[in-house]
Image (cartoon, rainbow, N blue to C red; front, side):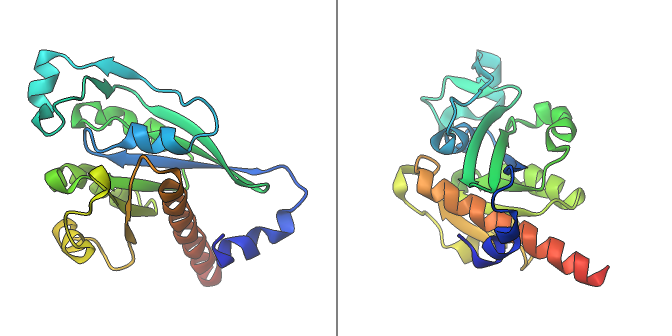
Length: 201
């Protein structure tokens, strides 16, 4: 447990857990459904639709030739971080044509994870731009496809033009411990920002 988070929630012991909403965004086929499903303690809710020939052409499916479905609304999962905190995960559709749903999905969210596939790094820009525009705290997680990190994180940070205060880390979306570490890193960012604003206020 990150010390800052544990300290801030220590007084909440014995109470009902605090519900927290987190968004998982990123481009098409980056691993959002896998990310949510690998850590969810409930059967994840998915809205996978079959890939059509037209959709496959638009979505550049040659990067993931075995992918036969795509998220058309959202993914949903839940994880209990500890007795004081329950996180609800909402995975967004990756295609820009479904972007009109994002405003509804992010309502009430405390932060976001942007998953990145370095083979198609420009696909990450819409999610990053969106979260920056609405001033929602986020972290960037480079998905280690096949367990391999293809590029140095400093190179990825530069390519994404991330500000210094945005954490960037690696995670294998299939590995629950990696996903948990990513969520804890985001919660630390959320808490740090909240405490900073409270001091200013």
